[in-house]
Length: 549
Image (tube, one colour):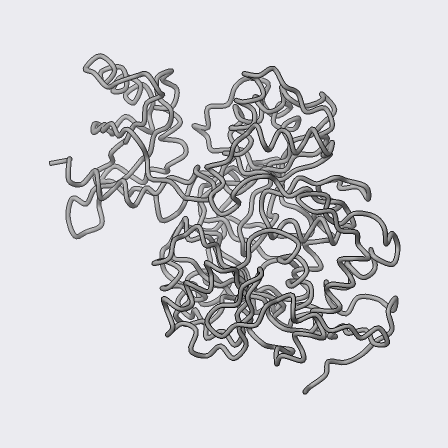
């Protein structure tokens, strides 16, 4: 059995699992997890050490691609740290995308080991072709299935030795798949350097202290809290399907454990704000709130701010699995930029780049750009595609040549890689980035190019409109489309001729929407399963095409 290099505890960082070891040495009895079970840093470190030796004994070693499909909990954190510690490559995928999408995405992964819960192993048996390369199968829980070993039987105690694989900075440390909510899911390659930079940067950028009690609503971000040395409360919710959350239970988590910080998608903040305002509940312990995953509209931050202390801060960072965070802005900064309500007709303000990241706006094109020399950088206040490079920006996807060609640009001068975010925006004279929508969802008409955020903002002004969506219906094979606005009304309102007339007048009142004459009503928009906020405009476009002549 191949053993990874050995080192003496306390001699520094070999890989990011050493953050756990250092925290266990500094405050062994401090809780790493508070809920649903209480586990100290010493106890978690002992479990990670035991799993590390057990995994090596089972055949999982440095470089072994290990697909992990385990729900949030102590097992998830411990086995992930153990895999990283021995240099294996944990692969994470969002099961919320559905079985069919997962089976497609994972068809080229060729995992060598698999760790999953009972349902995940049923998925393995249902799609055996995906898993025919797997040599080591491990099941969480008390029951093994389909020839798997039980995770709890993997623990191997070796108190005289300490394992920490000394991986190079640019070696693959993990593969995290995108959610698939804005295109086919892709496996983002994370290096040790990326992870370490993310842990350090997020702590500084979001003013995270050393004694925070963190409410975790997204499992991977729970790893950050442990690396930061803080205590985590796992939200009492289904993290695979967060839209189903019971806000009363999450509020109870915050109040029972006096959580000081939390991450939540805009949908989660909106649900908690609605519940808290209705029940006249406040959350005075929270001082640091981070929301991302979809555009965080000002009205959501305004509502949530009513639940928290006036000195608490709401951060709305912008980024993606490939690069997070890219920019950051707080609610107080938004109020300083514009004391009046913002309707987003000039885009959504998403803040200044997080240093030392570099952000540039380039001319919009759907074609690959072979080198940075081929990119045309646009001047201030010009709308184009957002590109970014820096120490926590992924350099590529796993076995996805077409994804790399369309999303990556080589910079021959700096020998770095620029990532094309696939989002449109502009940088103003103050260096602030404004978001205009997805590049793939822009609508090219005979009168010009329309962007989703500004156009939808016009129609969202109507008090009966819950949300709107700009889509394009094919007119001919030239790519020129007919712009259509789809409208989802607030509960209790129904479409009629008067409302249709008012919406037409709204559209004609603004230069950017004056050419849109087609308005369709839909009771419910198709949205992403995780954040319940990203509208599947491609699906709406197909629906609209059947109703527009």
